[in-house]
Length: 270
Ligand code: DGL
Image 1 (cartoon, rainbow, N blue to C red):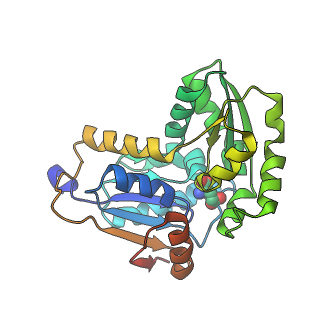
Image 2: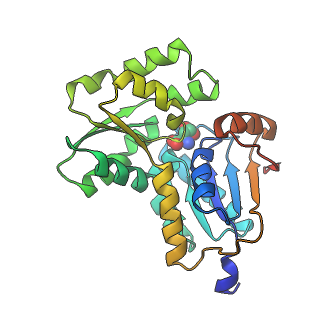
């Protein structure tokens, strides 16, 4: 394909399930002329409790699927997948591939004044050390407090964000923050922005919560500009397609709740 035609190809986004829609929403806002193909690997979610080899294998398949849809770039909208597989994906495919960790880390570093940042993520993301590494690369003098919060994803997916049990669990996970001068909490998982208010209420307004979705959308725009892959044809409505590896109806219901948009065209890809 000629390079100038590539600009009309869609952006590919994948996540283990619905969570990556929080990233997609920001990309839609920042780049309203871009078509997007979203893949949610709902048959194999969650990624957060699995090991690196497994997640890497899933990610290779996900990118291969998106390439069949002729995407011009891929956003790995899942923190666990970024933590475990981004480097490997970049070595394996020639199209540009962007993860979410660098964006979130950058935003946290820009925000902190005390130099003490807490990172919340799935077990896999925290164990990989990817956020700790990204943060300390940006500023080696930072103190990073990593906390894995494996119960947050199921609580959000079960619609229990407002439940008192969730409040108790947030308090339990964040207990150790008291021992550190943390002024910034990085929400290092697709689902955690959906617990934003609950976490903010518990930690108080002195602490800022940051997530990677907005910064990531900005980076997508920069990358497309740099690679001359931006679709500047503003005269047609963008097309959004969604594919999942299991249960499109559940994805649609949960996705609409999480995302606040109508999701048309959810296809099954097995
Ligand atoms: N998307 C995952 C992440 O951002 C959370 C859900 C899962 O564990 O698959 O880490």
